[in-house]
Amino acid sequence: EAGVVQSPRYKIIEKKQPVAFWCNPISGHNTLYWYLQNLGQGPELLIRYENEEAVDDSQLPKDRFSAERLKGVDSTLKIQPAELGDSAVYLCASSLGVGTDEKLFFGSGTQLSVL
Amino acid sequence: KQEVTQIPAALSVPEGENLVLNCSFTDSAIYNLQWFRQDPGKGLTSLLLIQSSQREQTSGRLNASLDKSSGRSTLYIAASQPGDSATYLCAVKGGGGSQGNLIFGKGTKLSVKP
Image 1 (spheres, each protein chain N blue to C red):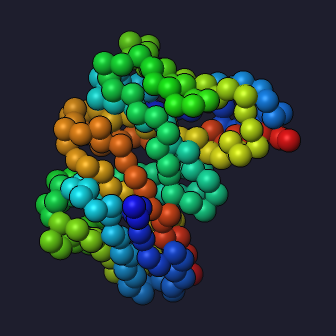
Image 2 (image 1 turned 60 degrees about the vertical axis):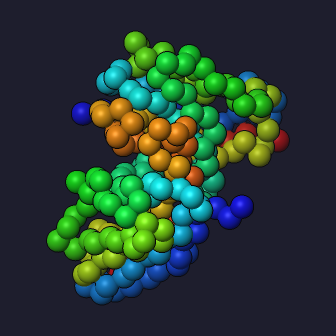
């Protein structure tokens, strides 16, 4: 069974440019998460989806970040415009959802460098 | 606000040693607690999940315990191997039960020397 797939693996852009990350969760997983991880820190939640509904986006900087999960499967996270401080690893995770064992499965992440 | 602390930040041990990683959290009203492993440049792999009603979980050489009242969890690794070298992160889910989000610690970087 395929795990959580993320692309691209690495992205280098100049500040003020837009960037997008893509995530394909494990088949059948209703809950999808986007996390941000800075070097030496634990992941911090940006947004959580239950199917196609964003149920928690309180930590998403909405002035420059946006996300969507069309048809409740794949998801895209976008930053426009990117700032130097956005350099980090962006992780996508999925789980079966509320009422299950709720174990999270993570993708390998996208490492973003903003120059 | 829930805060998760992991001590030590880094640990180096010789192969074969048994070791304990510590995790503490400030709000004991948690839904569950998970231990993850992260290899350099990779995502996180879930190792063990302990529900709030449980005291411990075991998987192979790993044993995780949970003491909600004191806000502590430990991850015990028996007979450590060089392949165990990685960063181990603890995360708690709370503040809303099954609707809550995971709060992560900064991790303990483990190095097992051959």
